[in-house]
Length: 381
Image (cartoon, rainbow, N blue to C red; front, side, top):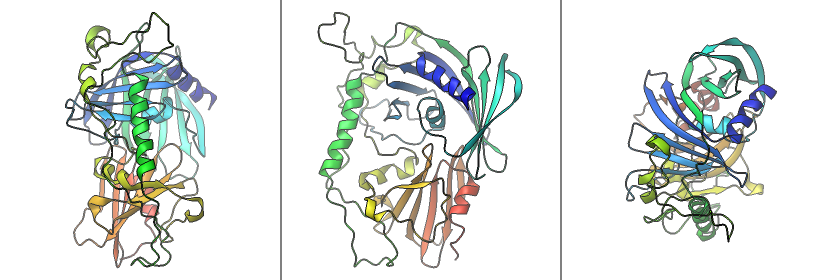
């Protein structure tokens, strides 16, 4: 584990620009350019640019942030990305609960000598991670995500990486502050949590429906300019720059369009686009109501993080969200469905559905299919 932490420390202490390729189990290859920077304020910043797809990329500060696109009219919450697992492992200090760490050998990846470190969940249900760590620099060269059956669900490979200096992170702290303030304002406006004792759910259902008047606030104004992070008053070196002026040297990471990006931020950002709007009604669970639905089988390493309802699923669609501190998943419960796909997956993202006599349950999150099936094992048609 010390060896893994050396790689994490290297990533968080240097400003690097990298080209990273994601390859999924479906043989789809997606290229990314990423900038990782350690700010003078002790915070860690990440900017990913996807070279494919409609969503241009996303930005994080200490693990929280937003998606950005080419159009200010196309506002996105932080949704699931196959690269987020890289950020969770190397761009944060998230705890690896009940993982064993084993040095499995040495080899070469992309022509570089590496040590192979395997992170193995002790209960055998979650993803394992195989890290190829460069011997010379301690930087991560490749991350392989393996499910509980030994199948590779995804792989992130660093094709090129370089340490860069003299470049400020191109998105100001003020932009992240505005996003976080928007979330705080949303929390303040939300009406009190209701627990309707007379609803049609069974008496063992302790789920909480959070109600909010109005829509999720837009976190970034159309006129936001990318700039250097705010600095102390009187500092002559403190300059505001436009998006074009703050573009990285060589133009490898284009950030000029980000200056017009609008975004809204959800509370978890881990469940993919189909669950993004659910965060309008998400709430932290009061201490006295933390009760997991009795029909679910939840591994001990996961804790109940939040609960709410999913507006697009209809008035009966409610959910509970669970987290092990590194990744998370949600269980949605809705009225019984007559036609549905039981299992869907995209890289490390999994959707597993199952019907009971009166409800449909869906597990959605960055977990293996076998774990999602374990969660629903008590449910019978």
